[in-house]
Figure 1 (cartoon, helix red, strand yellow):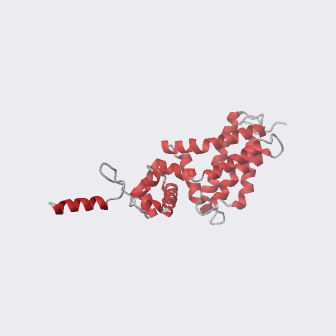
Figure 2: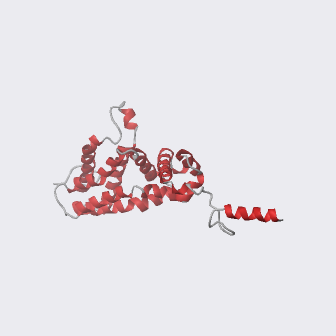
Figure 3: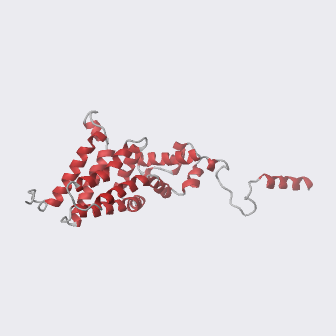
Length: 248
């Protein structure tokens, strides 16, 4: 009987502190949560796989395997898969904040020559710059996939992170183009988003050009700005869609 008591006592002493009777045992090894590189590895793995395969086609196990971490560690840091997707976008919040801030600054100047082009440049330049960074390619593709994904998780991401950007863009453009109906501005924005996502995320241009062109080429940024600016001016400064003759 004495041996049994000693064994039970030793087991209690060997258990982690705070995991006594009634405590919930963590599935994560005690030392793992303190490794910040693992958290970043998980985030980078999720961003890459969500971008390459789409949100629905990626499991938490896939993300853990690519990051080289236990599956339990993904949940420890980020919770469920929808929360991990949101964290990937929150990690890029500074880029979105910069776009909104620059757009609002230009809108606050009031109407003026070249305002439309300035707003378009402020809206698009941080995206093109991010695309040129180490992981920017993956995030650009992820944004495109999320924008076109009809699932509830993707819809929630777009509403949470990108609707404020849309509102800032429309408010600034309403100042730059005061005679343009709101609905036409909104459609112009939708067309512009499509152009931007194709510019930075669609690598088909590389195949069609036989390697002469590169998706997201910053050297073509001025062309992109001119293209979108012309579209906005055409929609808001011309007669209804059936006529392409600009008003005097």
